[in-house]
Image 1 (cartoon, rainbow, N blue to C red):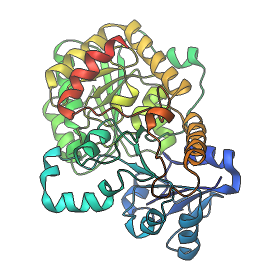
Image 2 (tube, rainbow, N blue to C red):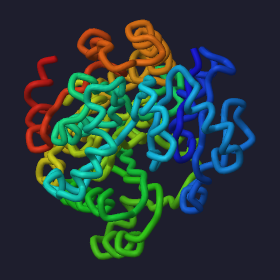
Image 3 (cartoon, helix red, strand yellow):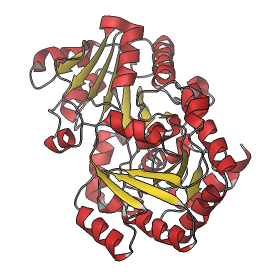
Image 4 (cartoon, rainbow, N blue to C red):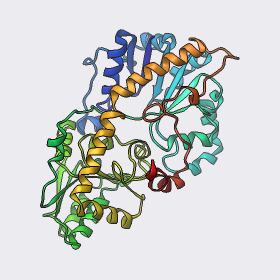
Length: 409
């Protein structure tokens, strides 16, 4: 079986899955990168992987060969790219396609009423609702977005990003929970929808309440000057450190020394791979319910804590629960680590993807001609984790779902 993955560019969040797919399939696996890595990403510590990976091909340097691969491979995954020019010949031929997408309405589902937008979404997605086209949902809100435009009924599966999984000594990892100041961490670009102001407001609250803690913030961006000013005005210089941009490996090492990881983004965070990394580092995570990865990875009160997006009081109350109890922090951190180690990792995801692709090909043949039965994921999906069926849950209902219904899972 030949499998080709097409995306705008490969990065350290996608390489582990690609490495595993290459291990399973060898030269029958190819990753096609359609554009060079953005300069902003390189400045953040990302690497240009061109010429370094045996399965990587660059569309902008080998267009004809890449087009042939897209057309002739048994299975093609499209994601993270304006791919209609590449995908149409394969779709017209009725060949198996897996589309890989974050949210299409990150700024609000009200945009689904736009006639112009609906016309494009119909051309890109809805008209293939009965075809051999399946959707890999990179986030808990993706299924709801596509449900609004009547796309991929019973053909949406949970997926995401799978950073490198580190298998660490659990006793050493969880031994970071010591008496004294509790270590907190936040990492990301200092931009509005990631809300770097929230950790500062939380630090102000915790200081007033008399808790001993230290917050490290990694990254930089447009709001950095504002954040520095907030720290100064609130006299938090002793409690908060700004660390600037670090290499991905350095960020992971810092997470492994951190007890509580804060993740404060809103609905514009399509996935948020730092959640995978913080959980793999044994952190007790406190995360906004609006982040795409949260509905898939976190079970509130079991392997992390979820606060309501935009509700500072809720964030403060749940942070207090964590700072009050070293036992709670350790229990959540250990459960988070096991979630990544046992289920949400690149090896598991790649193995399941290869198996699912083989099942789909066996069910319909390489070419899904008109009249062939297109399989529902209800028959083919896994029970939990990667490539399980993606539930359709409206954003307005997600916080209640995560903190109430799933509490009893």
